[in-house]
Every structure is written in structure tokens, then in C-alpha cells.
Image (cartoon, rainbow, N blue to C red; front, side):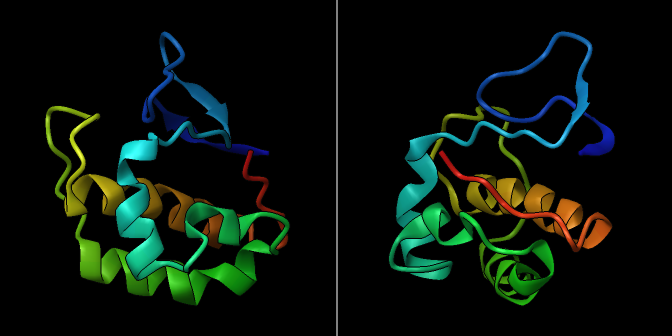
Length: 101
């Protein structure tokens, strides 16, 4: 799936990528367990993007999106920023299916 050029995530493509692929550090998982679902990001796996928008939106609203300079730092905002990317993609491609590995 093609999305806007981005360079976010724990593994970045030099010059960015338009692939809807995001490596999210495990460091954020306590926030996802608390504000997304008891199984964290794995809740997204196999779900249609449009079915995830409401929950992603609620988690982003709580966590915030003011990204720190240090990607690896486990903060509410860093966790929320990563979710905001997934939320944007879900809105752009509502029929897509999330795959979490």
C-alpha cells in the first residue's frame, strides 16, 4: 500500500519510503497495553483499518503526539505519535488490513 513519504520508526529507509510499513519500538508497549488494548499493538493484527480508527483516535487523544528527539524514549507522546501515523494510514486506506508481526 502506498502512503505519503515518511521516515518514521525504529528502522528508517534512507530518503524515506512510501510503503505503509512502520517499525515501532517495544519500549512503547506499556502505553499500548493501557490505552489501546490488553494485547497492545497486536490488537490491530488482521483488523480492517476502518474498524480501528475510533480506538486509534481515542488512544492518540490521550497519549498526545509531540514527538521527542529521542525516538527510543518511552513517553506518552512518542507512543501516541507512532499511533497517529497508523491512524492517518487507516483513514487514507480504510479497506486495508493491519498486519502486526
